Image 1: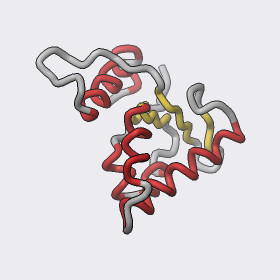
Image 2 (image 1 turned 45 degrees about the vertical axis):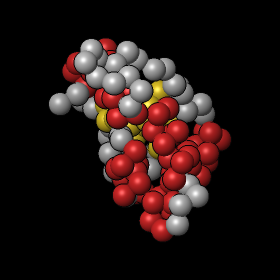
Image 3 (image 1 turned 60 degrees about the vertical axis):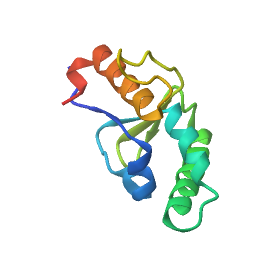
Image 4 (image 1 turned 120 degrees about the vertical axis):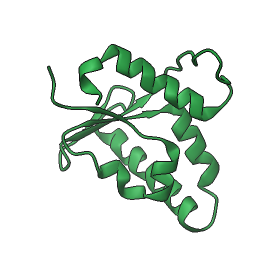
Length: 120
């Protein structure tokens, strides 16, 4: 059993604290592709939201030198990995499958089912 947890980060967390992507030492961070799509919509905005979106995009681009983001890249300085989840998973019944929040939740639920010991 791994002591590392899987942390699925929502777009709003990254937009309101660009450094949050570095805030999970000893764990594995997963960003559903929907989060990256949402970040792209904010990178041209002025102020904190645009700055955060641009920072996260540049940071993820820099990680590509260390490996494939869809396979997971280890941040040695933080003992943390980051992976971009490219698959989409079925949204639960009764939820609007077009809403991005529901897509992110579906990804988290799928990961939790696959790795029940790595979620709290």
